[in-house]
Image 1 (cartoon, rainbow, N blue to C red):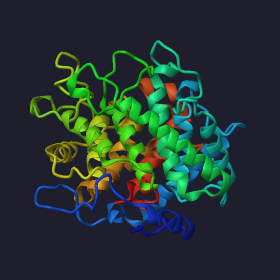
Image 2 (cartoon, helix red, strand yellow; image 1 turned 30 degrees about the vertical axis):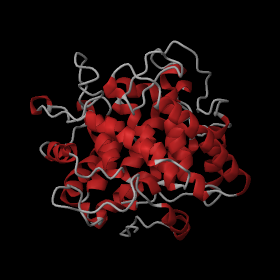
Image 3 (tube, rainbow, N blue to C red; image 1 turned 90 degrees about the horizontal axis):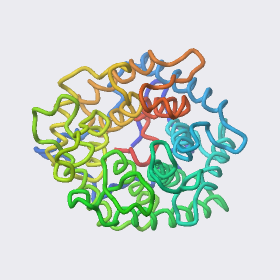
Image 4 (cartoon, one colour; image 1 turned 60 degrees about the vertical axis):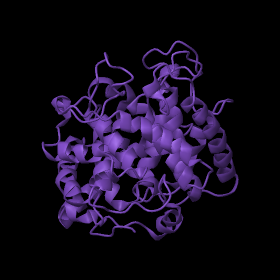
Length: 396
């Protein structure tokens, strides 16, 4: 199950903690067929020679050292308050992806402190947000970021649930159960457009104009999968409705494929809106479809062809460089084979070139700048570590 190669070697504690919780949204294990694009083998180490993996390892460790030094007294990893606890949850997952565990080893106490911070942000209704959520849903207001914060925090807690014990484990269990109730409430709100049924979107919880988008729905589905992996009761219907929405975001018109093959919202929902076809939406959609067992959807083959037909963009060529690199790396790891071998070296080279002398990855461009270097550093580490296969949700 675990990749072992020069430098990157998961520790025994991590293997014991994680090996028992791997599953898919759907029942059974995904199998290769003549119509799927997912490689049957899972040897991700072939993408780079041993010397290059050693460089990646050193880069990751330096990034985590910088990240650890940024932690605040209350346990958070600093970012815009409206982006909490999402950014702290990303940072926790970055440490987990390298094999660090709560209450164990070099960063154990810091990870536990960060988990406690995330738990402290859960509100009475079950959602996670550091700041109170009130209308209207303006850019970078808590009401605009709440579903992101909620989904990413829930994803992280599902990942660490099996790595904790005692009172903290019980607190996480209670928090996830409450969070799942709210999560389903958002998913089942009456949507204005029929094509938005089954998905999630940012916005004030009681918004009368409910809709869905690919960006939020990707994170939301990963929260459900992480909770399901951790053996919480999550009906398959919840996944199916969300994955149906993802499929509707597929753009069949090849004349619009310059920037990707999945829309921000389905054509049927927003026929007159900017389609916002992007690399990040494409990679997120591919990742969730694979994790959900929808291996024969044509969007996967289209996505693979799209990624392989061009060079992976440099930071100045894409406004969501870190988010896109994270999603692309995780999605291509799921596809595996020659697709992974072609794309990951480009992603890794970009990230190693961008890393600052102190270990951090500098602020991104566009709206990524709002979230600070703890955000960019966490996503960079997560983009560099899929071959370790240490986060349960991303194990092949």
